[in-house]
Length: 70
Image (cartoon, rainbow, N blue to C red; front, side, top):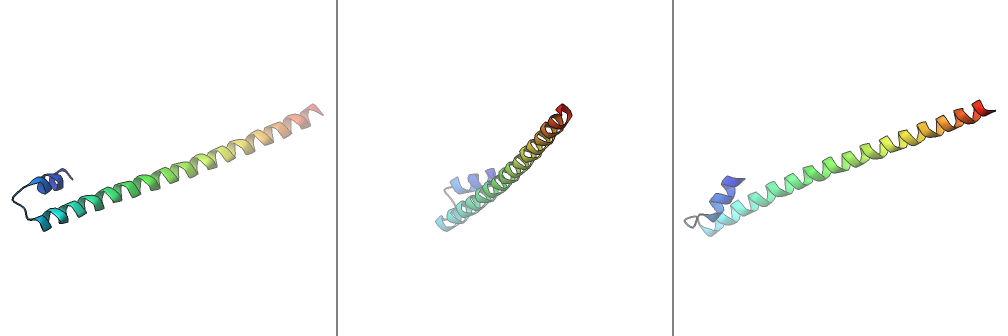
């Protein structure tokens, strides 16, 4: 990516070449953003699943305690 930026700043390159490099840089950036969002979404899903499992366990423990109290 640094190489792409370095090429973009080179004054000897033609304008179309700089535009091409810029579009490649944006494509790479959008790929990274897409991957990051996918990871964040997976993490959020995993967290929600974990919280649901914990709630179910707590409810089961409360029910068991109520049965033991009887």
